Image (cartoon, rainbow, N blue to C red):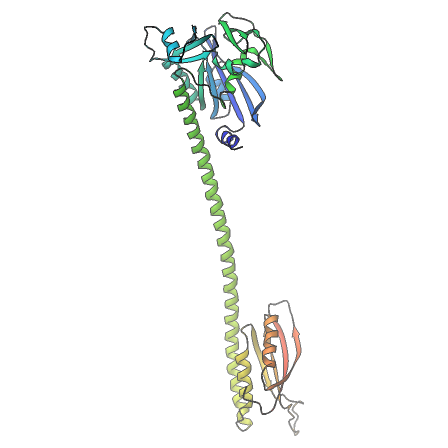
Length: 400
């Protein structure tokens, strides 16, 4: 599972293999694209073009690919099997310097095929692909990639785009470069022109690279370079996405707190306005109370009740009217003024029903309150509800 994730990170779903060969001295590019699912290549699409520019026009930008090079600049020689690749290369190039060449060794039980090409030619080809935004992750020379699929090819002769190969016991026995007509070949449930077999073998180099000769180090560098480019592109994109998410989250949180702060400020401004109204009302009440006290020979009961009532008042309640010992009947000329003794009528507004109920409980706990009658509590479309309550006072109780 982890290996599949790493592979998807580096290559995505679409894989590509290309054979660079020549036909009549002109370059030809045979290739395949395929999708990898659950370790298998599916939906193979063969193609053929005559230049790297044409490839770049049909393949996605920065498409990675494996490259098999067997153009006129690549030579293949057969040699007896030796212990190491270096020994077989030395046998092929006896007395000649090998520093200017790339070598690719294809081993068989009794012999080996050594393909070689000048480094300048290979590096020039890689540069062409790089300039056209195609990322080569590795390359092989000659028909070496056939080793990856030869076990699935029936014994006999088969013609690729450049070579005429004899397949036996799951490998190549002999080859020549005689031009032969290509034909369709069935490999398991896939049927392809034989001209694309070398490219097909290159697809398997993605997951199972088979470095040989002197190209192993160069292929490792190409693969690492492609991985670094992918890491930079996708890492940058993930970083941008992460920063966007963080910025969006911060924006949402800030917006939420800003809305909440605005709401609290509005409530505070409302309460401050109510408090100012209350202060004004309280001053009016105190003035009237003093007038009443003076009329009633300076008695302090009314002031005591009002002070206790106001002290217990929550901020959510705004008092609009207090009537101590209200008139029992309207005032008429030449009639005795009748009062309702030991009663206090309180009117006002509340924006919190629960806190209003708790206030009623507080008032009932006063020793000088004998009972409370809520005669009116009406909700309206505004945040404030009007109320009117009557407090039955216990005469002579002023200690609590």
